[in-house]
Image 1: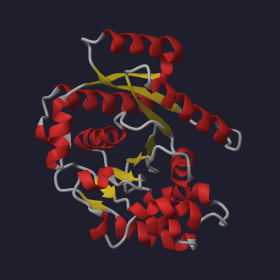
Image 2 (image 1 turned 120 degrees about the vertical axis):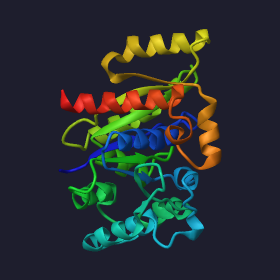
Image 3 (image 1 turned 90 degrees about the vertical axis):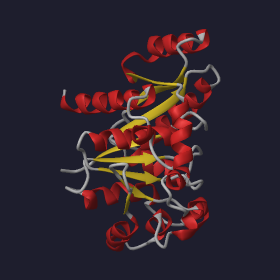
Image 4 (image 1 turned 180 degrees about the vertical axis):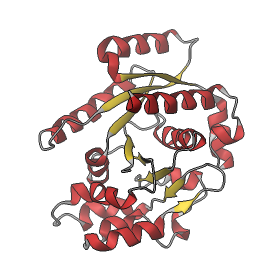
Length: 261
């Protein structure tokens, strides 16, 4: 079975991309699925959250992208994948040097399809590969969007967050001109405060304008997310009964049910 690639992307920061990648990975793993989380952000927030510090890693995603010989990439991928202690998924750590790829690969052909080419090597090893994407447009985000079966766009339920959604839509529209089929995407409402009228209005607007492109699952504000980050764990580990943990379990069920439909 070829793994399903889920890219978590938004060109606005602070909307819950890393939280979504890690919490969804944990929720899918809890359901018994084999999951790999790939940290494509040079800031390495997902990696650091899980205790994988770039300066301590001998092999990271930087080496994977830098390798010219496609036949050598599977071995690099095997070398860089690590297991998390209790989070129920594997991780491919990031490195600050990923930010240098724009310059390092500027003259190389086919740089937008490197991740897609690696997908076959993960055949029968994982059910899901979750990509935690950087916010800026470049080689890494393009690779993620090209490889993805589904792009999950976390959007804070705030009017200013609508701008970031427009940017990622514009990027996908540009890529769609060169791809054989349009990129599939769905918006995930995050940081929702049911007591705030503004959050309620943004959510209504999203569902009016995007309809079936918005997940039914809603990620609430929950202080347990911050506590989990400080402990280097996911919310499902430290507060399994919390509203945030339950919301990501619901999202995992919604994603798997959508595939089975």
